[in-house]
Image 1 (cartoon, rainbow, N blue to C red):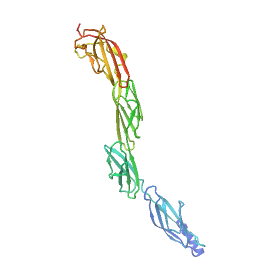
Image 2 (image 1 turned 180 degrees about the vertical axis):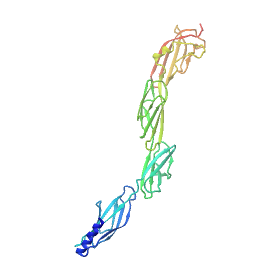
Image 3 (image 1 turned 90 degrees about the horizontal axis):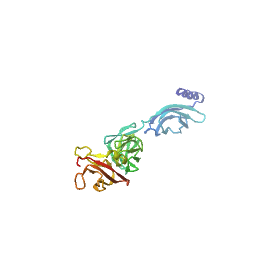
Length: 347
């Protein structure tokens, strides 16, 4: 191409006696930031008069040896000498370069939030920015505290900028904190985006956004949630306690469990009770003999009958009647009446 343009100029010189043009490269300024268009090229131009320099990307200049606002690319510049009665062409190739894209990676390591920067032009400067917009650290890392937002802005030597944010927050509510077994709990996840790990008191694990679980046994359960940010691996934890209310045995099961008890001190079946209950706010139980006389009562759901009467005297063996009334924390009532056989060896 170069040889052809020179040949054209020589031919014009032969036929017209005046034609003379030349285009050569003086300097190039490369793009400062990846993806920018602040490149520049400067030529040395020899021309007999007005001239135009055109680039293969469509940009051109008239009677100027400089072209600005160039993105990174491989270029071909063409000089057109437009002097009346004289026409000459020359070309030159050049390249505008750019640095690699500036990339920022933030990641947690224990209680520290680290950063790694790639691309651009070293050295880098770091600015950790708080919610009020003030820089609170210029280090490559900061101490991490969950539920806080961390914004990092990095500049390279050309003042190219990259910025990223880390925010991880575990937060949720449940549709009810107290319920009677079987007690189904539905969680509502209010957390930041990420990966979710749920533990329903050791009796259920889930990885859904907002799972539900049915508790079949009475008791207190801690629901825990770990949220892990999938970009930084930073995590946060939140938990709350729910109460599966009621008695361990359903009311219809008590007959089989409490037909007989033997308060003889051997440590086996020594008392009659309604233990293994949870979230009972009010409780009353009474024991009656076969004549309908109350011989014992208790108002604490954690207490039991040991076979003695109100005065502490051991009762005779036989069949007794019981009556239990209770109310759970959510207002549900429990009632049960039945018979219990006492065998203590006392007649």
